[in-house]
Image 1: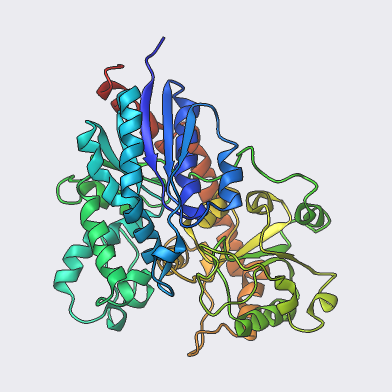
Image 2: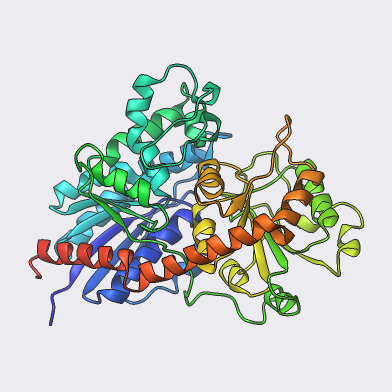
Length: 469
């Protein structure tokens, strides 16, 4: 019988960082059953119920170590979520080290895989004679930006957002400075310095596992493999999502029952992910735009907040439906359904009545949409979402991007126009077709294509390193 190969992973705080790295672990042990994974989970405040419920569903050869939570009182108030995530990891480093030490006292560790925010933990790999890897939960285009960030920092003067010419990353669609991730929008900020620090750390690992697939980003992946004469070993193992996971919703879910009654491809699904919020003004415009479009819709609504990322680490307790314009629910009851805060997204996107997805373009949601072949309306809010929107609209041509006015609001007429174009227009037909092709490529990459082969190669390398080949 094959010897067990032990892997440790370190996630970042926040459900959207926890899920991809755990889903990667599930994929690994499903196809390579002699592996055992221990997931070390830092958290800011007590772990959210969603994370605890999710971790309870894991198979027996994935163990979880919930680290002592970092108290919110220890951290500065009113700072960007990325700073809070980074500080939580930094303060958790002694606990991470202790957990790894305890693990290694029982069995040799083959590899340490860390989320990109947990880059400081990577140095422990050498101490415990393990291989070191980053799990990168975003696109190859974002990784390309990270890899080129130190050079860009030297070569570009002034703010990126003031550049009049696009930035051209090898193998990627050109991107304007204003569409770079949040950390790159203010080069004098702490968040930008953290971004550069992460970028430099990426090049030190034995490899980078990335949640994308060759057929979706061939140019960016090949350019990264050639970066500095093959300096980094890249392992595209995606798309890794919760599709097919056992913790999906009950078929009696209200959203799914409502979708069952709608015609095929007729519903626009509207959701801004597990962390995105809109202002009251923007909720009003979106409601009016949906009504004006005359299209069917399923809208996952959160209480308003003027910070786009307000719900990322802490959700509001208020009933969001009270913030809708007066009479909206009554006037749209034949065409739409509004639900508070959550919907079973994987099943919603997979339902045959859903024909479009108005999304914040978080990478998890983007990949779920690709796997179900649903074209998008991009509405990026924070983090790297604007760059994802550029790739989807200008690169893959499977999405439309509405225009924001000078106050940063998308007006109802613009919303209605892009909805009609996606759901009813000629352009929408072409996008649906291209997205269908991408869906097929994603399925074959996972079945026995590029991503499946990459994961097998990686597993073999790990087995050999542990003397098990």
